[in-house]
Length: 196
Image (spheres, rainbow, N blue to C red):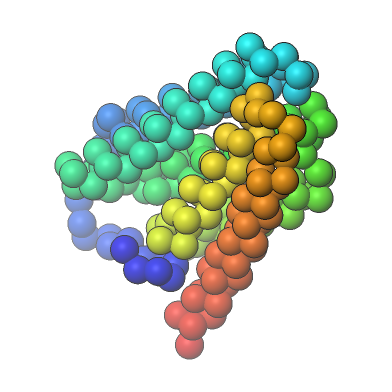
């Protein structure tokens, strides 16, 4: 996949694939898991190691479904507009819930959440507008790097790690913020190039 975002115009002549398939089911399952995950983080209060491990387990399981649905979709040639839009929405719902709940339990600075949430929601709304116009903007390599960094950073904050891990965890989170902002800018730059 290319390193930059590309807007793909959907064909009106190609046959529509059914939205009822395994990748979309996994995406839906990930969305359903979000409130349970958020509840587990809040239940931990940022101090209860048992609930912190549970919240981390739910988060990791949800991220695994993200990997699986993409792999299965590519292997079976399953491409649906639902999957292209619902998958990033599921990712963002999980990530935003993680960031906000970590803020609430006192484990993360609020400004980090604000920067990431504004970028994620802004680009998601833009992609929805493009879809309405018959264009699908798929995730690219940069987007995958962003998601991976965010997942690692959140995982470090969710885990009941010793105090000396606070600085390394923050460094990874700051790297995730930088890549998140950069990929958001890249979306807009590429869109402008396509318009000519």
